[in-house]
Structure formats: structure tokens, C-alpha cells
Length: 96
Ligand code: HBI
Image (cartoon, rainbow, N blue to C red; front, side):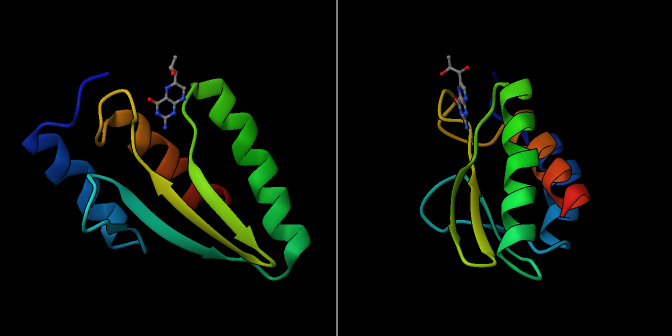
């Protein structure tokens, strides 16, 4: 999996930044904090995303406290962002 080139970055990252994602300062990674109405909804979303992660063979770094899920997306094999991260971020936003 190849790291995103500059034109791919412009095309794919800007819409995510406009939708609550941020770039981490110290890693080439995307971060977003998702808030749900309650724990049940947060965990249901995580379950749905876990099934997608397996399907895409691409897994988030994430943690859950009550109704909040903190997500970091990066492709470990590329040590940076790839189209897999973009795809998973879009999936997460659509399902949230
Ligand atoms: N998930 N985020 C992330 N990054 C990876 O590089 C990655 C993964 N899930 C599975 C995976 N790589 C496998 O393709 C390899 O470790 C075999």
C-alpha cells in the first residue's frame, strides 16, 4: 500500500478536515473524536466498524470511554496515510 501523494492528499484529506477530522502533530495520521447518544450506540457503531475493518483488512487505533470513541487512522505498513485510511474514515463518518 503506497502512501498518499500530494494530489491525493489535497483531494481526499480536505473534505475529512471539514468534517471533524484532524491531522496529528507528530504522526502522518488522521484523528477524530466521535460522540454518540449513549454507550450502546457507541459500541454498536464500533461493532459495525470492526466488521468493516476486517473486510478491508485495515484496522483503527481507537479507544472508547462511555459514549465517546477516539479514533486514529494510519497505515502501519506505510508508516503514514494511504487510501485505506481515507476509505475507512469515510465509512466511519457515514455510519456514525
Ligand atoms: N491496519 N491500520 C492498519 N495498518 C496496517 O498496516 C494494517 C492494518 N491491518 C492489517 C494489516 N496491516 C495487514 O495487511 C498486515 O499486517 C498483514
